[in-house]
Amino acid sequence: GAGVSQSPSNKVTEKGKDVELRCDPISGHTALYWYRQSLGQGLEFLIYFQGNSAPDKSGLPSDRFSAERTGGSVSTLTIQRTQQEDSAVYLCASSYTSGGPDTQYFGPGTRLTVL
Amino acid sequence: AQKVTQAQTEISVVEKEDVTLDCVYETRDTTYYLFWYKQPPSGELVFLIRRNSFDEQNEISGRYSWNFQKSTSSFNFTITASQVVDSAVYFCALGGVYNQGGKLIFGQGTELSVKP
Image (tube, rainbow over all chains, first blue to last red):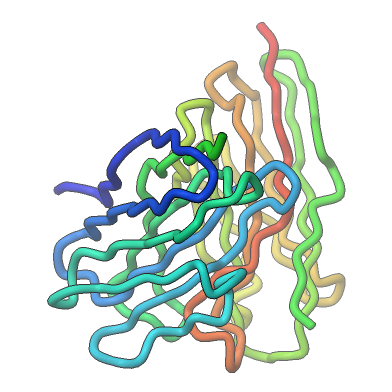
């Protein structure tokens, strides 16, 4: 079956512009996660969604970052007024449920470069 | 605090050698889950294994084996008879920690290079 897909695969933007990153989880998975992978910080949790519950936003680094999940499926991560330190690979993952035990399956990521 | 430490930043071996990747974790919870993921040069994180804190049995899958020891808070990963295709960055992760929801806490990763 289809895995997690993300688009675009690469995004180059200028400092100060807004960007939107998209994630399509595996069909039937109720939990969706965003992580960021950068050279200096490794893999960092950003936000996760579980069904209709309020998302856990505890990992978002600033209020320039936001995410939404429409219809319990597709998610969009938005970064406003991008900064050079936002340059990283943004990874999306999904799992059948949340709460801990379920394995998260990752997408190929979106490489964001802020000039 | 919850933390995962992979002390080996880079390992280089010659094909057919055995190699062990170390993972040490910290948590105060009694129920938790440990994972290993592989990130090949293509970039996508590939799931390898999940273990829960109540199951300390070692696991073997082909050339891969995992040694989970709660007494030392370690979950080490051994590749037997390594191959060039094993070259990748390997991440150990901790999940299912109370009050942390479903998020995973990753180690910094170990880059394994297998030379022919």
